[in-house]
Length: 130
Image (cartoon, rainbow, N blue to C red):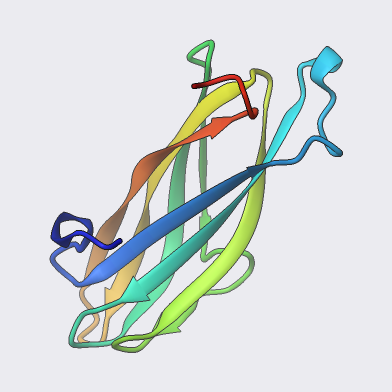
């Protein structure tokens, strides 16, 4: 369910879903692979283009990895009002639990750029966190 506090001042909403991928992981080798699906929805009054991304990935040992890049999955989607864009990507941790958070840099129709915060979400092997 969408809460009003989930909608930023530009009307862009970020929703996340995480899956642990045991078939790509090697638990004895401390390799834990996760996929995450992000849905970006523009509830604002004008179009917004996703220019770049910034991720902060933290494992259970407080090892921080920062990732910056153009667009997402090779695209810089333009979201018109009431449009959504969904993509799936992945990350690898050396611990069973970690977190991701970050931001998308967007550009409005008028050329002004703004950041959209990606709220922190948890990456966890099933049955590790209760």
